[in-house]
Amino acid sequence: GQQLNQSPQSMFIQEGEDVSMNCTSSSIFNTWLWYKQDPGEGPVLLIALYKAGELTSNGRLTAQFGITRKDSFLNISASIPSDVGIYFCAGYDNTDKLIFGTGTRLQVFP
Amino acid sequence: DSGVTQTPKHLITATGQRVTLRCSPRSGDLSVYWYQQSLDQGLQFLIQYYNGEERAKGNILERFSAQQFPDLHSELNLSSLELGDSALYFCASSVGLLNQPQHFGDGTRLSIL
Image 1 (cartoon, each protein chain N blue to C red):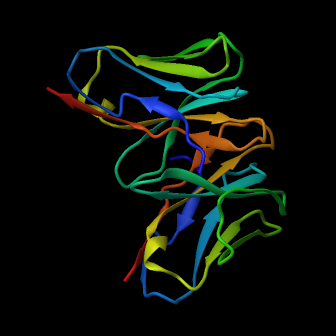
Image 2 (cartoon, chains in turn cyan, orange):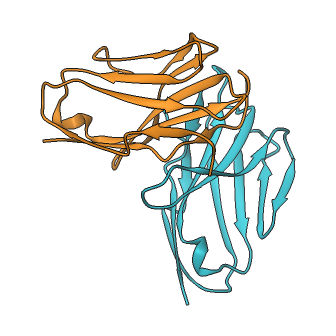
């Protein structure tokens, strides 16, 4: 099935570092969502973006909806051990289906 | 807690069998979505229901079917199971139809032996 290109595939960082990941598509998306998934649990919604250029924060997390509507990025500042998990971007395409990225696996070392 | 409840949490069965997965959406949500997550495929959209009616279909096999009941809970039926059907199956719900954030349950892990 269709998936968004998400990078990097995995990240290994030290506690306190900032993290940046992004998601790109060849087609336009109307809404971008960012989720975090912990092992054995369902994806948890972090941030929702509805307009091109929109920049939204949720605590130490900041996400932006790209101006071209074909990309989005997520930044995590001052990472902590509980940030460990898999981060997924997702976007609604022009058929109103939610398409997921391939995920970024984040590992934080103390 | 997302408010979306899925049962059972784990299911182990054999090839050729039939199983039913159940989902209760968040209170007030009318849309229910089903997804399959396997190691090499990520999250794949299967099907969506809105207020009891099928609204959209994704990569859902003919051996799979779903329905949404008047109380808005949904069931996903998987039949003639094959080894490749082993995966996590997630249900999500949202308030409305278009461009709504979806809230996920904790999934049902299906293992086919």
